[in-house]
Image (tube, rainbow, N blue to C red; front, side, top):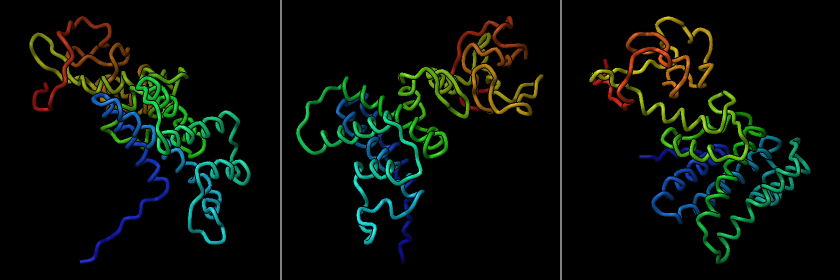
Length: 264
């Protein structure tokens, strides 16, 4: 029986390392030393994205010796070639961030180093903010599109600590805190009213306004069609009286996470 080998492309490999870095951020909640592996993986992802940029320009650019095309360039060489040969504009700030990234990885992987949880946590969040910007600018689409769904919550937590106040997320420009609110809202898909559990009405399934025919995103909280609104959204419809949920007279007991068989 022959074994079919699946080829992992350069771009796919970059996303694999990025998601692995977020997985290690998740593990760091129980063991802080996982921040080390989170950083190693995110920097590897960044290196692969640099090579992918070169690859898109010309395949031979990713090889150390363009005549032999055997070993690929180092991270440092990739940065230099992007600046010199690729038809890509890398500004000084980007170059500084790229150099800082590979120096940090080298510091961790090539010799002894001092471990400081706060320092590595801060550096990871800076790296994730940079790789989000770098990817969106040079690779061509939103980085969030390539994050595993089971890591959305971790990703949103990291995004909430970005220095920039706004981010493109799910195709909308929003405050960096909004992704956390969106992820949290999906866990509260029901409400309890007078002892009865009701499913909340997701965006696009309203009974009075066919929002799905007008837009892909909620105009207030930016959720996508099929997602549950964030708390306090002025577009959400009450599942009980079908008026505006924010201002209706239905006094709910609490938000809950319900299974489909429990819904009204």
